[in-house]
Structure formats: C-alpha cells, structure tokens
Image (cartoon, rainbow, N blue to C red):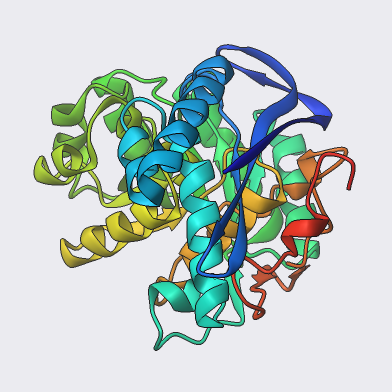
Length: 348
C-alpha cells in the first residue's frame, strides 16, 4: 500500500455548522492487486468522518497489517464505524484494481448485468430570499438539471414556504424539488413544514429532525412529503435506521459509510425494504466522486443524486472523465474507476 497526502482548495469557501472549509485535505491510496494497480481516496470531513490525523494513522496501521496478512488483514484493520474515510480510501483502491483485473467498469463489477451510460443528478440551492432562490433554480434548469435541492431551516418555516412558492411561480412544475433541513426543526415545526411544502410539490425533506430522533422521523412518514435521512447514518448504524422505519429515502455518502462496496450493499438492502437510495459525495476529489458515481450507476432506476460537485474545487487530483450534460453525469466505461492511477496526484 502506498499513500500520499493532498490538499485541494475550494473554488469558494464553504460555510458549515462546524466552521468554514476552504480546502479539502486527504490521502491518496495506491494498491497493487491481481496484477493491476488501483487508486483510492480518503478525504475526511469534520462532523461526518474521523479527523485527518486519525485517518492517516489508520492507513498506516492498515499498511502494516497488509504487509503481514494481505488485503484482508488491511480491511479488518479499517472499521467503518471508527475510520470510514480511511476505509473508503483502501477499499476503493482494492475495488478499482479488482474491476481492472476483471476488465469491467466498477459499476459492472457490482452488477455484471448492468449497462449504464449516465446518472441523473440534482443541483443544490443555498439559503437565500425568495427571488434569489427562484433565480438559482431557474439557472440550474437552464443548464439541463431537472431536480433541485433547496437548503431550508435557517429561517422560519413560513419564510421557506415563501421561497418554494416563488420557485414554483418562476419555473412551474418542470422541476423536482427537494428540501434539506439539516436537522434544524423540532417535531412540531417539521410536521408544519411538510404540510406546507406539500403544497409546492416537494418530493422529500432531508433530515427534518436532529440525527438522533429516529422515532420522530418515523412518525413523520406516511405524510404528504417523504422523509430522507442523511446525518442519522452517522449517528446510527444503517440496520438500526432501516429497522425503525424512519425513512422513505436514504442519502448514502460512500466516504461516510466506509467505501463504495458498503454504500452499494446498503443501497440494495434499502431497496429490498422499500426505501429509496440516493448517492451523494462529501465534496471530494475526482477519485472519490467517481467511486460514488459508479455506486449510483449500479443502482437500477436511481433517482437524481448529489454527484455533480467537482466545480466546488479550484483544483483536482486528475481530469474528470465524467461530463455533465442534460442533467446527468456520464459514467466512464473504461476499466475500474475510469482514471489512470499513474496520472492521479495533487499536482495533476
């Protein structure tokens, strides 16, 4: 196993509940397996995964384990519960090498029967006044996107409802609207919001309640707007979330779940239980974005996913072979992830 650090500046600093992010720091992982070299990316995100120092330490421990016991020993040293980003880095490199050895793109390594040329994506619209929100959605539609997720919860429910009303007045019914509250509401506010948002045809609200309130989310289900869970998958194991019937939709971040394999397995398990999977990134470099794209491509009839995030980076680890057109990202059909490991690096 080989590792190298990188730092990717964002095109615009991103304000989060845990502070402002101006760059994405992580570790590239290279691994030789079955006569092929695979590449992976571990890019921790505060509040979602382990810190960068823990990620580096975990990869060092895994490298020692691998030298003694091979890739299985390395995987056992990397637990998704404690060091998901580190596990994602090595697991992605291993899967990339496996898919290359089998001569298939990664999504077909997950499902050999699949043929997928592109994956639909959504645009994300930040919190702003009604007019600016409507302008942002209209601009996204002009680019070909037909699904927009609006950030809500930073202002009263009535104000967010006015924003949605302005969007519908501006663009009509030709866009699927989602909302993401990031756990901002209490149960009463959430119930009120879902009733109001239903008037404007919102598909689902993501994380309406705090991450630890599974019972509250379960009580919201069956109403006029679906419930999606994201942060709750950091707070609880996925089987606990599914077992409490707390979600209509699961928002799956491979970096947070410990790798693309874990994300795909959970997506299929959710589908079996009548819960829809949506795949998103954590503002990653091109290697991790491609891994998430392949996970989404392996899910039949997947809903629009939050994968078109490369423009948030000022520089990247390599040229991105996935292109955005008509509201969808093209899926690389070359072996593995779709990038040459020898051309990936912080100076690409």
